[in-house]
Image (cartoon, rainbow, N blue to C red):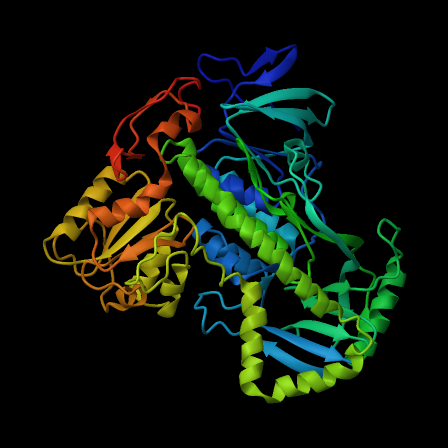
Length: 598
């Protein structure tokens, strides 16, 4: 039920504009859509102190699950968000992919992450409904409650404000003004349509999903791909024994056609028994859906003060289980950037990096999901006879099997995603971890070492992290101390080592394993973004190099455009006429938004 928030000092809770109620501008960000992507965005914005309002047109939480796989990189993200333990407790760890055809097992591909170190070398199979429930609990702990039955029907924006028109379940309407809007409202996104962002691409295949109890002697320790000779199916085991997610790439019924549960069960039972060569009994599914998926994406993910993420920005095949994971990564990428911009700690250059980094990921994703769709379907008439020959070769040639394991399962994991070409990445030949790569890889090399434990804790900080290796008196110590003093509100400075020279905030590394994993010699440094990706580093921490690494955060002149909240003392980088950044301590911004709204 819609409720009006309490009033703030000096303003009524509801004002009017052209006869239509306007809620007092309390939130800094309006998130449209309360799926996993919208909830992740809300969590990261609220975790950084911004007031967030989340609305969703549905009458309540979803009762069915499209996505069921949480991949390793998303687990690392959930670790940084503080919810990974709850996710692990609610799902089943999957480490393999097993292929059957014509009643015979072809090959089992085990997850191989040796070249991609991670504390989570597996995919967690968990219903999307449960993932959303855990995220709702997490945002509730931050004071954010989803408003169900609130539909976005239109929006306008200017240089300073987004004006959203909202319709409530009781038919009442509301005009809501907010500095920022994030559209996470799915494949039929109203936000995307209002912004005029086209979905470019092509239509694709019609598949059927079902969640059902299955009687089978197959061990539930792997995902199964089953080819019947003319089509392919998939089976994914849930945590609850006997419960499976089933996928049919050649459904009999059409999208929108009512489901006969018993008929659906009979079809799945017959097809799976034929492909596996053993009896399989599928019960009437508790949920099933036939849908036609598309392969499309937007050319850009931002329009003025509005952003899109997840299915609002790209729709594609569920073959590799990338949709929800990619959307969560996008929301996590955007959250810290939007928070820094709103707080006056960065300019519009930082916001531009959202699309610069994520649009290429979306393009690559469409290509990879097309390949995955082809591999899952295998509709070619020659596929049946050829499969045993091909996979006998794969099974018996160890190096080939391992290469496929790393290529296929590693590619799905999200661990290979990097931002080497981002404006935020400043490469240096002295860096052991390349600019744009995952810092979590260093923490995973010696997971039980005190230094690794401390780095993982550091990655949960909402700020950037500067980790430098302790050295004797010299410029590195002075730069570390100055950086901590000047930028402490958005930069955490940690001294790895024995504390020689009085560096700030010691980070325990008694055996030097963390410094070795990070490739840090005495005085060396690495700068890590709030989303856990390496931005810069070098062999010796100097002010010049650190300023160069920070310069992409933007110009002070943009603060008036980004964050009007009265007088504030915020350290902000400004580009001087000579091209090098300098620090200005005070931002005088126009007082257009009432004090204390954040």
